[in-house]
Amino acid sequence: METIKRPSKALPRLETTAEQEMALAAQKCIMEALDRSRAPSIRLVANGNEGATLELPPAALRVIGQVLGLMSQGKPFTLVPNDHELSTVEAARVLNVSRPFLIKEIDAGRLPCHKVGTHRRITVSDLETYRQKLRAEREAALDAMANNADDLGLDY
Image (cartoon, rainbow, N blue to C red; front, side, top):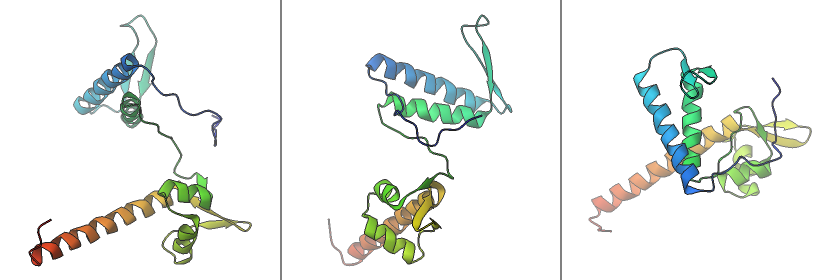
């Protein structure tokens, strides 16, 4: 099987409301089937018994259901393998931070990377771990601020 690292086209978006409703109905059907089944694989049959059948593992079907959910909402999305490597510019865009800030985080040892020649590369999985850690730290800081405000009797 051949994999494509950088697709030349963006993933399709559902433009009409009818297409989005169809995707939402398909997602609900898939998720309900997954909720009820503990089978090692699930068989999809097209048009009753007349069409082709396809057997899929539940994990793959769950991903398809999530993709259908995003498509039904008209949200753009990107599927990227966890071991895909990003440049510092790409990683900064994903995190919505500046490249100099990202470099400082790498130099401080808070974000792992490796070098290819003189260029830093960050895997998607490391970037996601870093993002989750940042989110947890921000939530903890906000909780601490709310607790301090409560202790001081501030109403906001």
